[in-house]
Length: 389
Image (cartoon, rainbow, N blue to C red; front, side, top):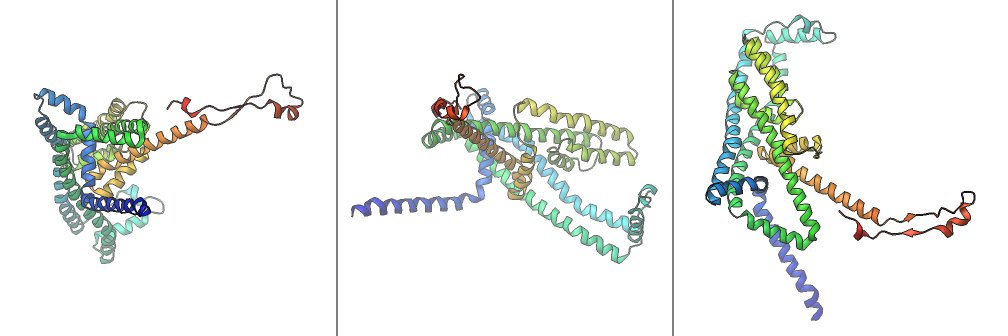
């Protein structure tokens, strides 16, 4: 009976706890991404929120509503407009291509047809396309099928991401109002699990979160806003959609220029040379330089997060959670990378502290070290407690 009490009852209790946790995970699984981004957003903006609440007579509720309205106007509304523009223009692009083919395509430039190996093949293909050759048209349709599938997947990810983003803003309101209680509970739990080291890692993760949110995501939004302003001012159609694309391209050094320069060339071809020059200079000088100004100010020169980590976080997050994953993916990967690097450096320091060092007295002569080496060895062991993290 004593053995039953010692082993069976704790096993049953552990099984009940594991079952409850598994069922709770199934309930919360659809909302984990939105809840995680809500927590990241609230944590990164907690100090501005407290200052705003102080200005608003100490009302956390009013401060939360003001901040969420600001976030919606900066993130949610531009994404909605850009998504609508992209969706409405897919059919227009297809119709324009069909009309160009029916009306007859312009002749290829001489420098294209004169290219070695490819020039003759391109000229033949272009002539068959202009004549409406059925085999060539079917071949183009086959090429466009992956593009159509990608656009369909992109539209689905955009829609689901917008819903998750809206849900995350809704959850952020409750975290703003009662988030201080959650943080206190979390810090007590971490202290009980891992002691002061766990709390130190939590603070390190917090600094990484702020760096990614302000540095990479903030820089992407700033560059997208600057690019959108230039497109809108120059009268470029679908300026909001182009601004959204620049937000993704900003993860690549000089990425927005990959879109801005072709658009400037399009303006020049339509006779708007002045606006084309303005757009090219703006994209290369103003938009590209924002990356070199904003990141060092908000992240700091000591931050060395790998570029590939941020890029994979954006792509993987978008595939996993849609539009919300663009923000959530790089943040989670950056936090994981920082914590693992800190843990590895701490373990290396503790290991090196317990390694023995060999000291040989000065009076030992070089000509006969084998005989004296065994008598001269002195083991010096540094205790691990003397090593500071």
